[in-house]
Length: 217
Image (cartoon, rainbow, N blue to C red):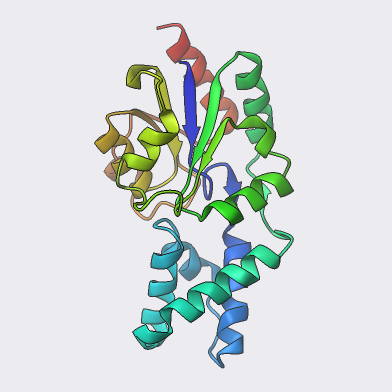
């Protein structure tokens, strides 16, 4: 296994509390009630535009407000210190181990590039990755396979493992014809059995065993 590409939110990091805080600050400014964490998590996965659309639909906000509210949420999020975002237990040890093995690492996220880098740098994770692709890096986002294929680059598909936590990630891997490992403790909406995957894991040390097994095949 030469290359491992990761999703970000719900896979490497638990960022939902910070996303919720940003959304709720905007809602309070608009004179609207706050959303609970479970609701915000249900809106995560398809990038900022879809998140904003789902929030607007919940409160029946006019479509004409989309650009303004998107910009405001992104402004709030970028200005935060990622106070509530944390890496999942074991992530850093796994990244250290993979780097030591010479595995090329990348991130392919639907989060816009700037806040994705903000999170990675704030948690001292950016040093691990050769390339970070965000939801606004190209004209299309996951589940379109293009962002993932661009992140993979020249590496042969059979030597790549994509790691994510959601239905969107699973569809992306399927369309790109890339081996997919599902992190079951992220932001998925469906049961594990209903999400196509080649491997699944609930702890990051378990994931390391999956990679080691693939390297010996």
